[in-house]
Length: 350
Image (tube, rainbow, N blue to C red; front, side):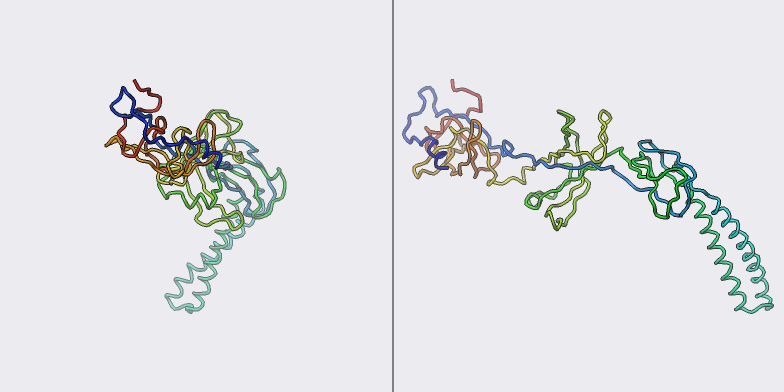
């Protein structure tokens, strides 16, 4: 910082105004923190907007597989069939038991009203009827489970079994994914999360880019965010949504670079901005300062800043507020409350 400070021009307190101007002409530039820090960047991973495993609910051999990896399917479409033979036999057996139990129960209702059987016998017959009905319903459901259907429109991400292979209950048969839209998952560190404003996502610009797709940004929208940090990484998981592009084959598992706009309300004076070196002077106390212009009165006043690193053709400083107007040319010839003529960046005095 000592080297940087030595490079700063000293304030000249008794310089005469330009002969052609009633007031000293100066060139202004607005303080824009976005010159150095208006976005945050994070790596994210794409995922399908919806995914599930199509699993077998019963244990049986695969009879037929109708789709394989990468094929598109519609909701309710038949994906695979298990051998239904044993389930059909069980269904017929339980149907017969149900028919008998129902006939007995129908008779018992009439007999108990006539006093021909006791209420206890009636209740026992009724219990057997409801048991038979439950067993029949179970057999019908098990038979339906031999026909595996798609839960939603999507694509077969992976087929896990082969034809005629025996599968167990709860074993995955297919992985089904909906890639009509994609989720992009990022981890936001706690030191950034604490400064972000809780605001509707529409106010913040979000985009994703991919290394293999040059010069194209894909708009994102906010979906959700965890409110508890990961115990190990101390980061918060944020989920964003991206519509699947028609021109590019972006699939789940790809790496995306996410750019998130920092809102003006989230910026603070401690955030560095870049100014031309000519804008920063040393006052009589050898303190780095800049001249701030009051555009109503057309007068200047000094403001102390903290110089940082020299970058490109400018210098980083902290201590300024977004929107303030700083003199970037003519600063060495000013005094407090001096009237000035205002020129924007790039203008020249006549």
